[in-house]
Image (tube, rainbow, N blue to C red; front, side, top):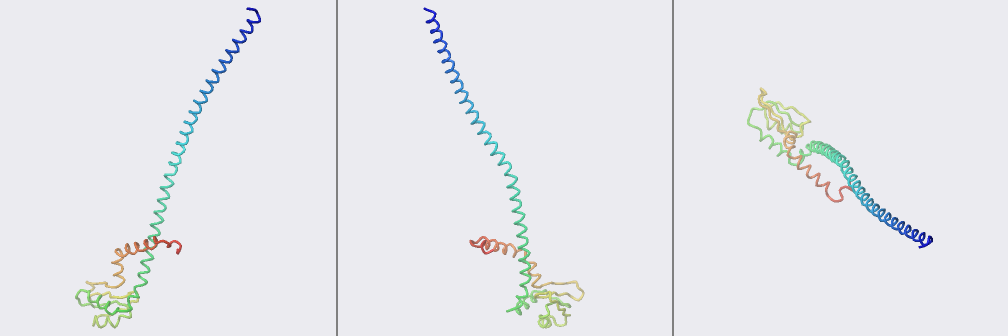
Length: 196
């Protein structure tokens, strides 16, 4: 083998080795790229999951605070509505004096226990009815009494308040839930929000 042939053979062998090394390096690089792409995908997936978890962690107290605020505002609004309903009911008591009020007055007097009533407080318009129902008693006009009577024995040992105001006061704990239910039902009707 001549020197030229030897050089050509060595060059060919070197080129083959270089090509093999390049091919091996490219295969390793491709394997590393695939491995890194998998790692990167796993890292991105983990980061997305961690971010979602952090968002959920941050969201929970905000939602809890919002729910508490809604509940507080709802209770405050319901309290204002309840107070307004009570005021309206009290304002409408004088309207009960119209129509068959004479029968209502007589019924309220008839409910009183039998006693020698010495003092009677009543609405000024009820003095005539009071005089016939309580002959000999001291009648005191009180425009704050919407209807009915407050009676007391001479010594003050027995006192009975049987007025429309007192009736409303006693019945209010039972009336209020019924009224609030009606208010809620009215607010829940379709189209109610547009009317507010």
